[in-house]
Image: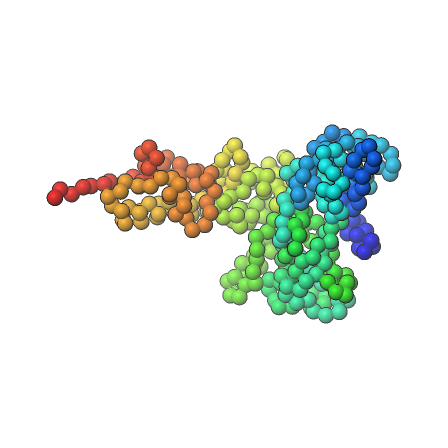
Length: 364
C-alpha cells in the first residue's frame, strides 16, 4: 500500500512541481493533534504556495482552516511551495474533521465530484479482462476510494489495452484535470492499471448504443485528451446547457486560474462563441445555447398566444418555467433582454408578450 502511495506522489509531483503560480494543494497523508496547538496535517505540496495566516479549505468538505504554523523537515518556515514535504498546523478545525485522503487547498480551486472522465491504461499483467462496471479501488493523491469503471465504448477491456472511461466513485473526491490515478482490483487486491483524470467535474456518461451516440463520446474524449483549453472551455459550456458556468467553474474544470484563465476565456469571447450573461458573477453560456433559449422564449410565447388569444401574456417566471430543462435565471434574463432590446417581445409592468400580440374583444 505504501509503495502505491509513493508511486502516485512521485507522479503528481513531476506533473505539478513547477506550478508555483497556481492555487495551493496538499493531499493529506497523515493527521494528528498536538497538545496546545491543535490539528496538524502532513503531506507533499503539489502546486502553488501558502503562508502563515492564509485561509485554506479542506476538500471535499470545503471546511475552512487557517494556517497557524508550517514546518519543512522539522524546520519552522513561513512559506511552503510546491514539491515540499511539509507539516501544517491548522486553526479553526479539529483533528476529527480531517482524514487521510483529503486535500488542503486554496479556496475555490476545487470542486467535489463522484464522477471523473479518465483515460485508462490497463496493464498487460492484469490477470483477466476488465468488465464494464467492474468494482475497483481508486488511488488519487493520498485517497483510496471504492468505485466502478464505466467502459463507454466496449463491454470489457483486454490486458494491455487503453480506453476512455468514467470512474463512478462511492465517495466524493476533489482533483484537477491531468492528475494521475492508479486502480487496483477490489479482491484480491492487485494493481491493474492507471491513467490521467481528463474531466474532474463530469456529467454522467452512459454507454452509447447508436453510431451517432458513440461518435459523441469519441468527440468528447478527443477534446479532453488532445484539445486546447479554448476547446475544452466550449465543451464544458455545452455540457452545462442552459445553466451556464461562472469563470470560477471553468477555472476548476480547466485547472487554470488568474491571468492564465483570463487569457483562455478571452479567445471564445472574441470569436463570439460564448457570451457573458452576467458580468457581476462572470457567468458564461455557449452562444448556440443562448440562441436556443431565445428561440424557446419566442416559441413558448407564440404558443401561449395561440391558445390564449384573450390573455395579454405571462410573467417572466411563468415563461422561464415553460422550459423542459433548467434555465439559470441570469441566462434567461440575458436572453429576454436581448429580445426586449430588439423589440421582438414587449414587457408591460410584470407581463411579457410578443410585440405583435394584441387582445381584441369582439362586439356581441
